[in-house]
Length: 249
Image (cartoon, rainbow, N blue to C red; front, side):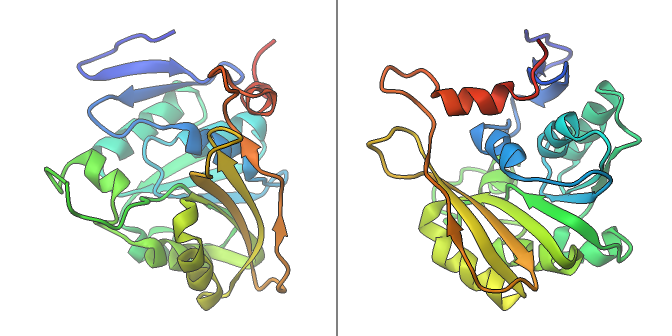
């Protein structure tokens, strides 16, 4: 399944309509959170979608696999990740539909030339703590920690980029949910739907999926929890379905 193409790089089969992804193991490789967000987020046919903190481009590429009639733009600040994202779009022959722009989301209006989108997605850095970082300039540290942007920067960029009644989809950590809601409402984004993700049915949630609407009315729906693993370590049927919905037969 994996084919090494240069030092520290491999090509992973996304098991989704034949799409593949170049990953650099020296950087932050995508995980379960990206897959879950790409399934949780929805975009209508011919919608415009913006992905913030795109990394190697996995979220817009997975979303394109299930909705190829939609156009995607991804924003990434790091040189290595931006290069990977562009190559991944080219690898899957979707460069015309999935475009990546390099820059800081704090300058989102200039990066997108003031364009407004129907949907914004993000899998941002989760961690505020800077202790324990050996090299704060490393690609992995920047992907995991709020070193170049913080939560409020991400939410503000989303709000500034959305059309009225546009939708914002985020995956984050449950322990920051109060801060997330506070930031969203302060920028005119109303949380409308959340789903907690638990590794096992007897373990606390370690991820939360959130949908907010720009200019939406207050009303929050809490969906049933998503359980990732059975007790024998295998994936649950619902999780497998998320992986398999767009898989080749």
